[in-house]
Length: 248
Image (tube, rainbow, N blue to C red; front, side, top):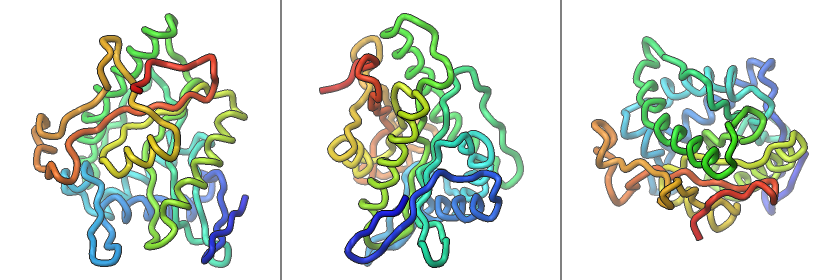
């Protein structure tokens, strides 16, 4: 699938996890964009990754392991330059398994365990909310989990992100998924998800948004408040009969 902007043409496709070189390139793309890239005179970093002090190399290793396992379930979308095949964008997703045990990382990746520890309570509340509303246990094959999205371009970043989401939604509907959700870590991403992609904050059984505040975390309290204050679970239904409790 290809789309053209005023400047570039990119190729959008589902990541083939058997192509190790492609997976490594996708992991490098995520590592670079999440650990920090300079756009013009501005340094852009993902608050959770920067707050944990992870480097592009170490976080790229974490991404590689994810893309070879959970992210290799046919739901991760990549954007490539058509001439070079270089990965310039990754929308890393998985088929959410409510009973999955968290992966424990060791060595250089040990710090990445803090990411898992941070998002696990949010995912538990997500499961509780869905099961409260639907009245039945959650299973695999129902929800696409949007884990990471990164685009290593100075221009056309938002365009590439939108095109990857378009393909993801098409693939997810074809596979019969009921909805998509993600843990949104900063205001810029929240604005993109809510105003351009149709996501909204998911409410828990008490009618409150599902979120985790950085200032209350033993490590992530170092994230500056002017950068981000929390991670919020946002949701988009793919089946009109499977709408959940969403914030207005």
